[in-house]
Amino acid sequence: MRPEIAGARRVVVKVGSSSLTTLADGLDVERLQALVDVLGALRAGGREVVLVSSGAIAAGLAPLALSGKPRDLATAQAAASVGQLRLVQTYADAFAGHGVTVGQVLLTADDLTRRSHYRNARQTVERLLALGVLPIVNENDTVATEEIRFGDNDRLAALVAHVAVADALVLLSDVDGVYDGDPRVGPAQRIDTVHGADDLAHVVLGSASRNGVGTGGMATKVEAAMIAAHAGVPVVVTSAEQAGAALAGEPVGTLFAVRGRRPSARQFWLRYASRPRGEVRLDAGAVAAVRERGASLLAAGVTGVSGEFLADDPVDLVGPDGVVVARGLVAYDARELPALLGRKTADLDPEHRREVVHRDEMVLVGRRPAS
Image (tube, rainbow, N blue to C red; front, side, top):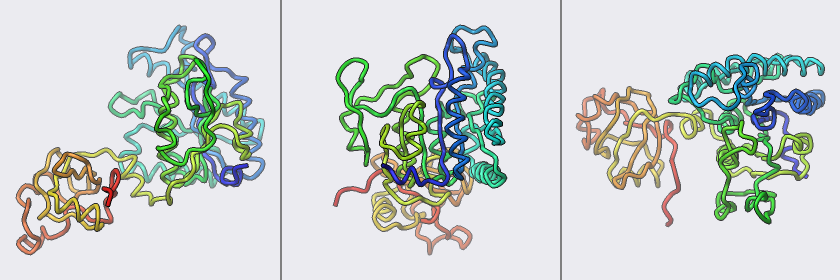
């Protein structure tokens, strides 16, 4: 048994399009009802649930007489507009049978890459749960452009798990776990537990769903599971048919064990949700100070800047070898920094003596060098 899953008071459950819809018929109400019955029972047992549900575009195909996934953005947005309404109404009707009220939360990547929007999303989800509402989250495909898309709801679910301060994340699809090979083409064994990336070093992960309506594959699920596990949230990847068993802590699917303490909201946002607005280049001494001593970045260690960023924007800190060392909130506009490059703090005007990036506004990226 998996007590970290069975004992989770608040869980985020993500279900993919391939588990709810088909190309021929669109939304499969019976499969949706089966999932709702599992989650309704979970709620009746006193646990809180946030559902991240794909399926809006796929649910809109049949009503619009579309025979396949739209290839152009405008048609996809039109299908999402029709399908999202049907999807959430079907959920609302199904959950009503369990005495559960649902609320719709539509997000774009922009809503989580902007810090103020990230905080607002967190407050909204928290308030819905406090009111006894089950939030249903989806990417806002009706308005999302290619530049502000998550691309799949697996990564969105990992971010929502942190936004919702969840105790566990369950990723559901049409595959019952992570395998060490493709079970469709030869012998393969399900991996029970993943403790880190090394456990999957020799595994080739698929990149497409089986029935043609999903956008993600096992690779996106593993990436999302790793994000959540590194942020202190245990994850199970399994099939929708095994949702009940997974949430009960039974050893189904693949468990991604927690790999670190839960970071603060700001640290998590910086590492996984922020979008850098530019780069600040560091000399070797500054790289060592930031990476090894956990120091703030001072103007003396900066050799160059690129991008159009403002004070308090996220930027990548890049070493002389071009490797990103850290990401942080910069204290100066891009136009201010060139005049400060390489200068000691004592030689600067009082208004420019603050750190370029304070260590409390910074997260390291990648591994520390081997000692």
